[in-house]
Image 1 (cartoon, each protein chain N blue to C red):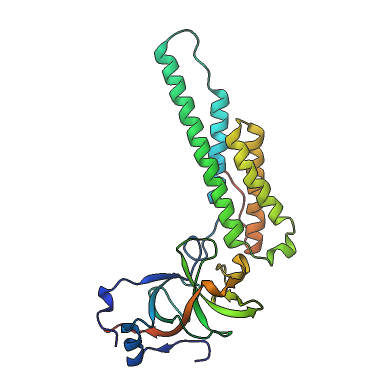
Image 2: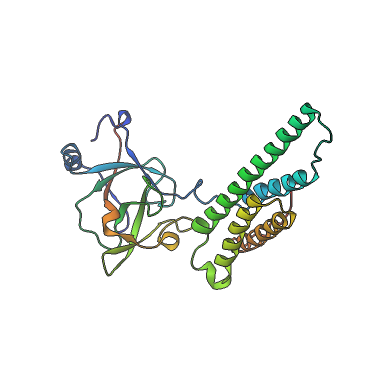
Amino acid sequence: MFENLKEMNFEIAEAHCDGPCGVYDPAQARIEAESVLQLTKKILDLKRPEGDDAKAHAAYQNTLTRFIAIKEERAELAKHHLLVLWTDYFKPAHLEKYPNLHELFWKAAKTCSSCKQEVSLEHAEELMDYIKQVHEIFWETKNKDVAWYTAS
Amino acid sequence: MENGLRDDDWMDEIAFAAGLRDIFRIEGDSMSPTLEEGDLVLINPHAELKVGDIVVARHPFKESVKIIKRIAQILPGERYILLSDNLHESSDSRSFGAIAAKDILGKAEAKIKPET
């Protein structure tokens, strides 16, 4: 029956979600948010060179631009990982125990944007706090005790 | 075989050759143990649907992605609640809501056993 199937390409019907089925971890969002926090600190600490040394100014602009570009990228990735958790992992049943879940994700996502728009230590730390709350709720839903930790 | 799928037969092959059936390859395990990663499933785009049927549908939010789930409920207005057989942490109508009839591509009728 149905000979030569190996030679045929068939369309995929996905029986999973965004990542490998069942694999979700707020650590992905945390790692990106930590980068945002560290880059925010680096931008704030960066010293503009004095004088007219063209090379020094070029080096400063290059470093500042890279910090900003990577902060932007990491904040967007943090938002992406948060949205994947919100849309694909959490279910309506979770709202019974965590009625503020939607608000938490909404605020966290908006703070990702704030981190892009501003160079704000306050927003970057706020984002980490929101992700910590997501971390705690997430592992509670899995009945696992996973400690919150940061890599930096 | 109330919830499972029958094995394919010669009539399925004829129907497929005639363009009356589609074949999809399964990725993921949210329909396990009924369907496993790599399985081939025969889809009838013209079948009448009922609760308990396994169907292929367009993902409501992800363009060009097709999903395969089981009909858990049929709502007024021909909207379908689709659930995974493996409910553990999988994405289905519990997260993306009901699917409109126009987005159901067909009913799974058989699991195809490739010739070895």
